[in-house]
Image 1 (spheres, one colour):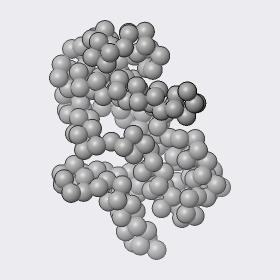
Image 2: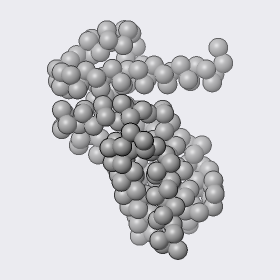
Image 3: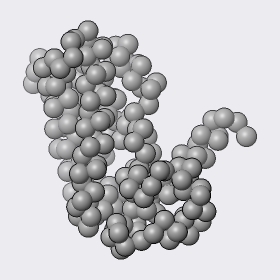
Image 4: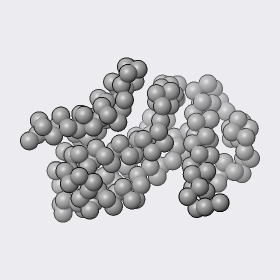
Length: 193
């Protein structure tokens, strides 16, 4: 088995574990199922679960390592297009489409947080870690000092566009998130030019 297919298989198993953990948390609540029940639903041993996630919360919230180092390297080097907002758009699109999530996936995640509001805090912490990583990549790319307003404003614009595009995607069956998101990035680029 090639290294690439082993990674793909590992990613597929990781996604399956997370999807099952989310389904159980929606159905029974976060405290309403055990790791043994999760392992049974996934069809793996409890020990195997720990090869993928350190615990139930991590499994429910999915992998924290969602920014590809290769994507960050391309972004920091000034790519893929050479325009900060558009390149941020590509970076975010890669982050949120790496698993090719379906509308059903996003609705399940929405239901997960409605049913388990305490998970919102943990998800926000993970989101803030990702935002910090993106902000640092902007500072590195632009040669800015730490905490520079330009990086904060760029991230704020992209986060706003993400929320707007996601709300449209979830409310309209005919919408495509990556297409709508990048259209929003293009509109923001025109507004700021």
